[in-house]
Length: 162
Image (cartoon, rainbow, N blue to C red):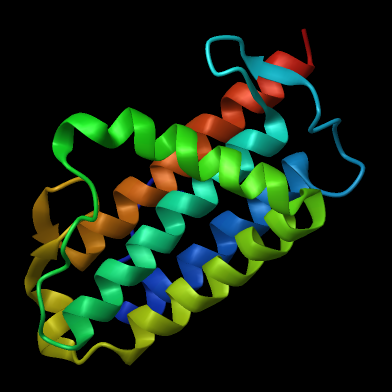
């Protein structure tokens, strides 16, 4: 994300795709080997991290959709199970394979962008429940989820370049 954060719905929708494209230019295709071990404590490879990002992007999409229906997003796991959620989601996506993980990651960015644009101006300005149980604005949700992606991608790139 740039130094100046987006403000409007359309700016945030564009930012989702700008971040998507920037990330994919760093880790996509044949840019780097996503089978490289990144986090030994997972153990998670670069592809596992992309799977992890997809799981949180999907929950972000669910929270945006609930907000558009004027419902509060219900986090589907207890607070103490967030680590298990992360582990289970990555393991599930591993079984689906690399192509599925990459396609899902791409599609979720498009779907998040569309979900942001589908909100009314009032919904965009109002507060909502985030997947990590914080309540805040749509802008804050998007800032945090895109920052989360960029932090993990930085870890991938750093590890591969060692």
